[in-house]
Length: 313
Image (cartoon, rainbow, N blue to C red):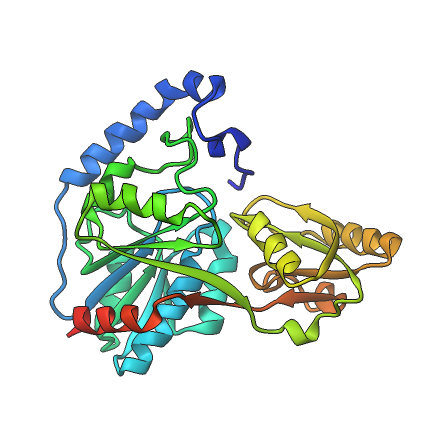
């Protein structure tokens, strides 16, 4: 089921709604406890990497998965990405298929076995840190600097899938986006896990030359963090006259697109969406719509590449 993230999740402190929902976090706590004590599987014939989050919503894990795939491929390893099949996440599955070699499976253990049978040397999972059955060789957690851990509470009282203290169990943190509080976040993380590696990243538009800075744009998206889409356009002097936000992983109906096109005509605006949204549109619906092609840029990329090389060797 797709839904829009409650605004109180990203307040600096829990509010009355958050406190009222605290009792409903108990099943999450119990579930996480049993997940952590179950038998774990380690694989000797393949290196397993997981890029995930503990903050529910858009944190940049899919762009990082694509970026890491290209890095490892360039290093010289036979690498594949993998995604657990969810019927409401066809967009991410198709994006990975378009940009990487990928395996989609109903069980992550099956995806690993398939990768081994394919003679892949490395498998990168997009999402799956909460899959405690697998003892991943490398566990990477993504955060958006701007939202960080929101109000710090577990679902549904807040946006966290597990407690922030669990960063003790992970290897690398990526802080994505622009924000001036990165150093404060790093300080908190290092107190929890002094050995963890922290990297910063941001997005860069790859098809900026296709956009007209003299035109107005109506933008629409159904992603975990729609504000990041609008922000990068404004940073690059693209005029956004209207933004339409759908729930994450929204499946567009003919009526949705008709309404968007009708509104754009009223505003005399061109239409722009994300690549993740564009990939879900039919050829007919996509005719009058452009998409923003972005690439994740890692601040200390060479250091990250060296770290990955060391881990794989």
